[in-house]
Length: 178
Image (cartoon, rainbow, N blue to C red):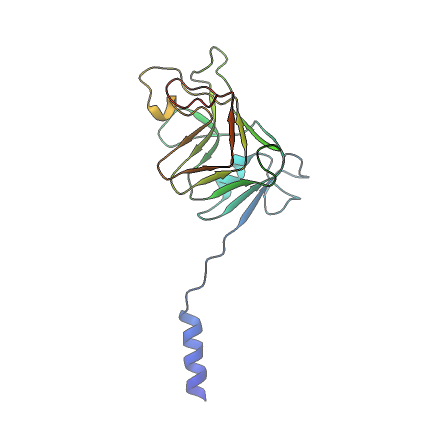
């Protein structure tokens, strides 16, 4: 009997456990801005939740207009309202008719150094269920295609854009999204 219990204990101790993945919450109207562990303390910007998430986590975004926050993807200079690089899924609760990511034009011209793209989505990352509007890219010729293409969304190889509406966006080179 002791051997059976010992053997069972060893099996349990060395059985790999499924990793626990977290859900992060985003709402423009939550009572406090973070730490994003529930709807009551949801982050107010999508990028804050993305920054806190780890691989395979889910960032769940409720209805609203998201036009603040942002980040620059790795070595590039273009700001993205949402920059997803950490192997996660960012999904809206009620789809693209209720949840908007808004970029920004360069104040001097449509595309330029102060422009903001709506989203940059790296390999193994997903953005699903958003309306992407008013996204723009860099305006300088000679800039990387990563900075001058995809005003609404720039997808790295293996990145996924799903159930999104891309409208009224502009790019210097390819994929404005108009």
